Structures are given as structure tokens and as C-alpha cells.
Image 1: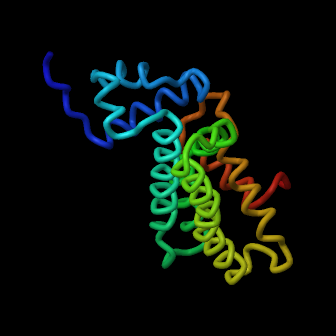
Image 2 (image 1 turned 30 degrees about the vertical axis):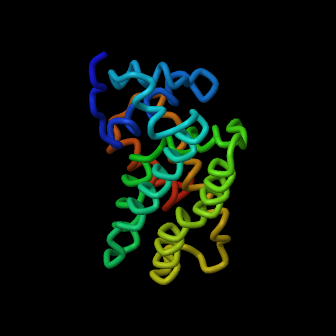
Length: 188
């Protein structure tokens, strides 16, 4: 029997990401993942005893990467520049919401899964910290009214990014329209 092809963590997460988006949690199997990477199932099982532990670890990794990405906004810029930077970064992680939505389908088959779910749950606040900094800057510059509810603004921004681009607008134009909606609403 030949040796298993080596694969990197990045390969593993890339293929896990693509499969979750294409077949969902229920359709995801270790066999599909192994086939996608081009390795045996045994090679994956050496690292992860079941799909639940693999997927929850992928979700934690994805969340860490997303928090780091949002935290790299250049907060020394003006509010409008920060907002533009933030929207581009958020757009790059637009499928995070869909992927994290699978969390409720993952059974607590082990203590590892249960603990990672709790870690994941506690990490959500980390996504909001950079957004709160941008909103604070907008209020300090007088662009956002002081009495606006931060949580509603944050949720609004997240929902706009999650909106599908059915018109297939160029990404720059799509994000510019979102930025204009945030800055000016629907008024003239």
C-alpha cells in the first residue's frame, strides 16, 4: 500500500470551506473531503476522528481569521476611509454567516466539539469590536448621530454585506452602493 499524499492545514480548510458551501453540513462527508484533497480518508482521520470535530475546528479557524482581518482596518484614517476598508474586508468574509449557521447542526459527539462550540460562541463579540471602533469614529466626526443605537448599526452593516449581488455588479460598485446607503440612507 502506498503512502498518503501530504496535505497542509490550508488545503484542508480550503476544501472544507468549498464543500460546506456546495453540499452543506448534511452532505459533507470525510470521503468527499478526502476525494477533494486527493488523499485517503485515513489520512484525515489521523488528525480528526470525526466530521464534527473537523468542521467545528474549521469554524474556529475561520472565525479567528475573520476577527484578525477586521482588526487590521486602518483606524488612523477618516471615518469614510475606515468604513470603505471595513466593507471590503467584510465582503471578503461574506460566507462566514452561512458557514457558522451550520453550528446548530453539529452534534456534541465529544467533549472537544462541545468545548469548541463554546469557544466559537464566545468569539462572536470579536467581530463587533472593529465595527464599534469605526462607528465611534463616525460619531466623533459628527457623521453618525450620537443617539444612533450601535448594535442596530452593526447589525445593519452585517446584513448589507450578507445581501446577494443578484445584479452581478462589479464588487467595487456593489460596495460603494452599500457605503452610500450606510452614509446617506435612501434620501436624496
